[in-house]
Length: 190
Image (cartoon, rainbow, N blue to C red; front, side, top):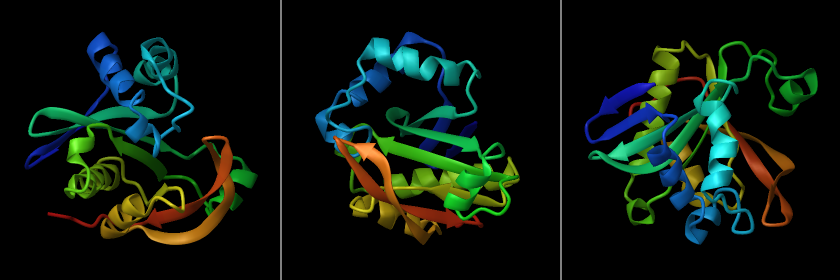
């Protein structure tokens, strides 16, 4: 993935120390960890390399990307095809078919860029790529129910809430409910 629209660009992570150092910077910041991974679960550089290098090298189905605002790296986005879900997982995610269905996840790691509409632009750009280039039929995401800022962003991009996934994700020592959200169309956001 290498896409750009206006001041936003998204590219695949590279197997180099600069990309890993960016991720370590973001995933050791307590303000970022409050929303992604948890403040009790930091990722220093050695853990970043251990966790993300298999994805970067293509040994994992998840595609890791970095995104930029005006050529400044500010966050992380990942996507993956859900072709190989079990019957139980398909049922949980309300998916009769998983062919051409993708999941995404992301965070803005540079907190000075929060609350500026950049997440909406990044999600819109990613959706355009996934629907146009990868020929997706549907894209899903599963934010914590308490993450109202992220949910508003996803709704602006065409996602709708399908159902609550009870105690879906362990975050800071507690299993939290998440919203299963999906979109089956790209919605251009300017």
